[in-house]
Image (cartoon, rainbow, N blue to C red; front, side, top):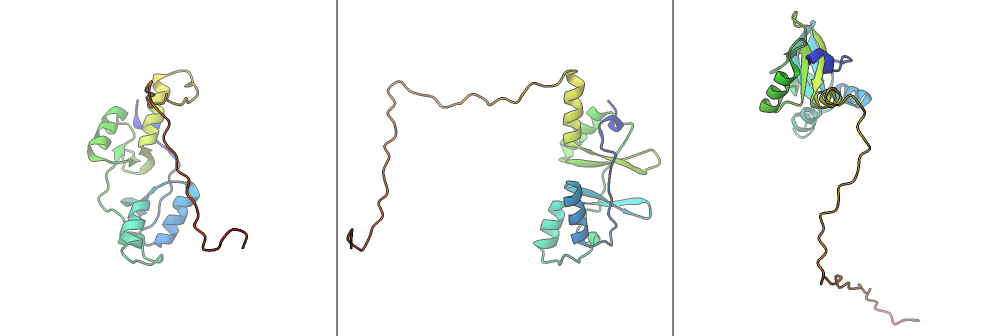
Length: 164
């Protein structure tokens, strides 16, 4: 399966000069944890919710600080015509959860997440819908001579006698 068949195509980007608060609001609105950072039609970085929390908030930066101050500048990406098995292996080895996808002209065309890979692999492997989710059996073992745990009641101490 090719990356283009598994990736999410609706990708929002942020500008490196946008405020952290703007990036966080976009993440909230579209329910994502990472955004590609683009400048002059070029991918220049990635910003994650963790970047905002750790490099921004925890470092004492205000919400008006710029994306470029906390984004990751080392951009790793894959091509849309690469095999998903190869890309998934690389993502696992490098511990990357989300990867920008570019075409051979290096224009951003999508983003590939571990969830995209898991979903596409599940549907590819099984042509029919999966059954309902079931609860795993309890691992608790009941011993034949087990006694119920002794319970204690907590009494509230009162400095006043009852009825006073």
